[in-house]
Length: 256
Ligand SMILES: Cc1ncc(COP(=O)(O)O)c(C=O)c1O
Image (cartoon, rainbow, N blue to C red; front, side, top):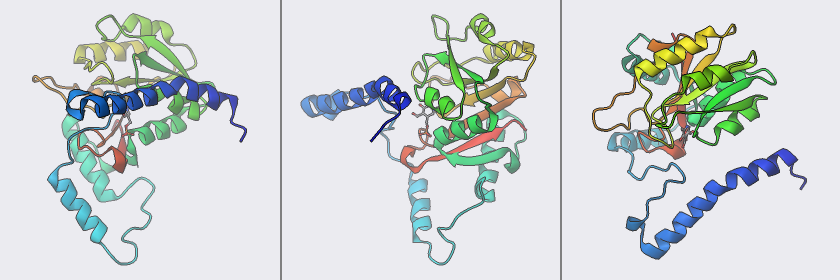
């Protein structure tokens, strides 16, 4: 089969994650699973909550026409209502079900957002070190990623972000709490970022990828993105916090 040159190059660049995963499996077989921490793929190693198991049993037991049918494109209204309530509480402002779109995981949420926003050649800023899939999500929809380094302590380098913005910049993706660094951007940093983005003559959308929002320790909190910047969207999922990566339950929340 004639694979495109672009896909060959992508596969070469991304194959190291799989190689690390395979190396982890090899080391686990050699030293025992308890002695090897595998940070390659983000599969949580806790079981999903009992309430989730119960809900799944009910859904799979449902019979009759339509019980496993298509749904509205943006998701079931009662699900969007529940997600809106959760996001509203997290963000400290009223969020309605019309601000929520259910997606196939956070990956689907970012892809849908890119498809909706990008014209060919538009640039999307991503902050290194970053979740490597961002490159593919942006490329899928005709955009180009522009990598901006974070500071030595992995906080936002606002001067570097400002310098990277061009007339083609359509969006910036931030990820807090961050994979891989664990960094949480403070409210002050986010306010500074908002000031930088507002300086651009065009609208630069702030896309906050937050699947790790609930996995924080030592009394840390994750500040509200909606409070910081009006042209913002949250893309997230229940993959990590409910241990459900295989179920692909994600969403986009648009600033109300
Ligand atoms: C930072 C980040 N964003 C997005 C995703 C994709 O999440 P999902 O499995 O919900 O599509 C991951 C998965 O590892 C991730 O680490």
